[in-house]
Image (cartoon, rainbow, N blue to C red; front, top):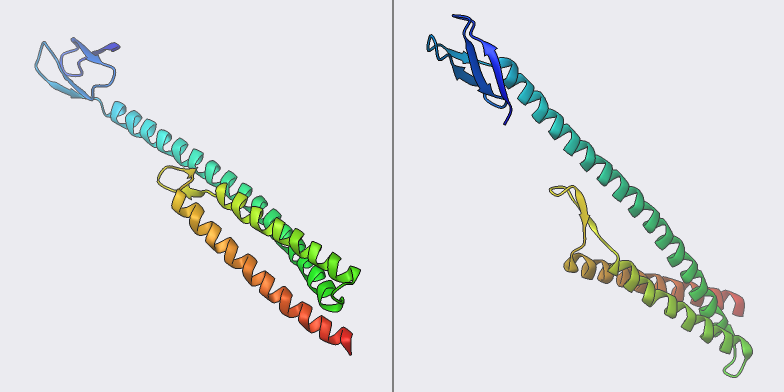
Length: 176
């Protein structure tokens, strides 16, 4: 510890104190000397440290949100493209005869769409994380990943259901 020597404001004697002490007693006149400037400095230093922590937390949260937004945008585009692929396959399957090329191509397209839906839900859920405000950083929990997988699987099933209804309606319109 660094020792600082100051003059006693009462008798002018030399008083030694450690750098982080807030008071000392003069060895000559026994007057207790308070160091308010140190208290203020400690408060400012403490506030600076808290501000640095908050700033780091804010930057981490902002980076996490930006990265999450990018990932969500990519996921939405992939799901939209896959749903259109599924819709195309369902329409081709619906308008084709049992032994036609349209039916075969439609079935292949449907299989491709399913082959995209399943890994998409697994990969996205596996890499899913949430921002922990207490820690100021992203964290990955198994339960969060599982619930994200369930949610994405439900969304994919809903998209398949809606695309199937749309394909059936298109097939009815094309049949007329």
